[in-house]
Image 1 (cartoon, rainbow, N blue to C red):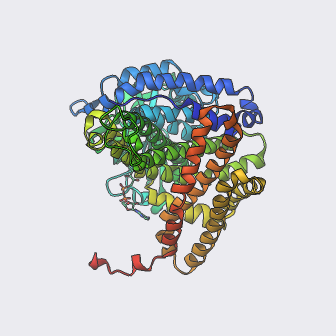
Image 2: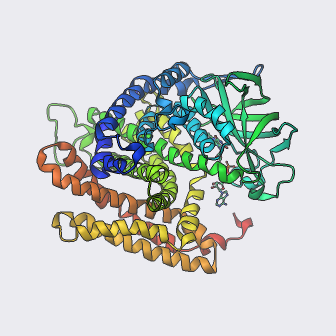
Image 3: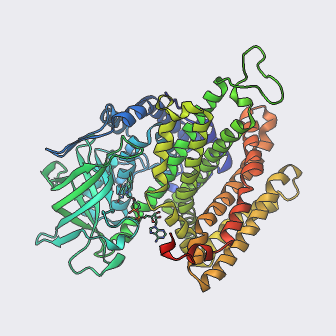
Length: 596
Ligand SMILES: Cc1cc2nc3c(=O)[nH]c(=O)nc-3n(C[C@H](O)[C@H](O)[C@H](O)COP(=O)(O)OP(=O)(O)OC[C@H]3O[C@@H](n4cnc5c(N)ncnc54)[C@H](O)[C@@H]3O)c2cc1C
């Protein structure tokens, strides 16, 4: 049975010591009363809810899964899920970062994100119900009409109603331009929507009284492709003007998918049989509106994998300290016992430190991105908002793909630390491995994220956004150039910064001759840039740890060890990745299709 302790100390380090969140919030009028103590209190209280309420339901959710009653289309979530959700709503957790105009608490996104890391560590499958709701809230908040906002946002804010995103159809996942669901205009301004959606997370359940589906469909006069997609709001129960529940809308769950992980979350086939829907935003502009939800979800998926990395690490460390097996290569460390703990073995340490570095690097990346998002959404200065929006755009595919790829590796390492005990269900580690795998697939596969990064975010603007990040790297390198204690961090960071510039120019040049060069390099390229971000964050962390380690607080000693491990044992991966990215597309594309 696994356990979870919220990593409050490291969250505080990242928020207060690395990024000085309080000073950022002071520059934003809406948040200028949010100080470090307020953030700490929320994280501590939120952490209790996660470890005491959600964590004990994680294994139950995995073993029970969801059950559909095909006769009445109702869906039962695992034991305890509904009650935990009630507690979540009653405590106000759903509304943390929502707009006070609709009943929200108006706190920064960053605070909400810290809470979501802990929820995901405790129970990813459960967390997807409120997580998608929050995405639907964001989308409606930005693109809904005033009437829609007044009717739906208070209920989504409080969590009384939940939300979904209904994009995928059996014949189209990545290529949404092919989607076929239809929307017929009605005399009263509504639409009748018909179609079949698959893989819809949280698509039906018994945790809340209503579900607000955001559905992509085509109007009768829609152009083909992605320019002919519109977005509709399709409630399970059509609300009356006062928010009370009205008629049941014909949008039903036809079946639930049986899948590798996240069993506690209902992945539904959703049939729309002339369901009533209301247009959100402009006709044929649905994909752009849906991108608000998709971008939020991409950051959310990174957060899911960060949560899993952290909880896997915590459990593997406890196991490694306890499990005795073999002797240290340098002689017995526990002579009074028949064997040493497996923590004496270098490779066990390597697996644990790799996971730890992925957790700490991932947390820094997620929190930095969340702070940029707060600036983008709420800073009074337009220039600051614009710059922050560029950083969020650049970081989003990295948060989604780098953290989820790393979590798959990290959870697998943690399973390996348990030996055979990791593979059997009793210890809970195999669930984390299974749960983490989907994060590389949904919300745009990691290949699609890589293409988004290299093709759109980097080459699309001639490298401007990347250069802005590069400037931050350069500023740190120049400031620490004469600090001998920082040499071991700054030299490799500066070197990688140069190499990323050269690699980007080289791929950009080749792509002008042959667009397949982008597709062939993108996945390796994203990992290289992901490492540039982590190297920058670990160098910043190391600087603080060097300055404060004399305090005797062992937190800083451990931080320094992790940073050194990262630079010496993980960052060298970039040399191989750069070679692979430079190797080009020919060997991939020249093989005839019938030879596969
Ligand atoms: C458990 C689960 C929950 C989900 N939840 C939701 C949800 O809530 N709402 C929703 O709408 N959808 C949801 N999905 C769907 C998910 O987002 C899609 O599965 C995903 O986007 C990939 O689409 P696909 O499965 O059709 O794969 P395909 O699009 O068929 O892709 C197959 C492979 O081809 C690659 N590929 C495709 N196109 C390209 C390209 N242009 N360039 C390079 N490579 C390419 C992909 O990367 C992938 O490796 C969920 C899926 C699962 C399994």
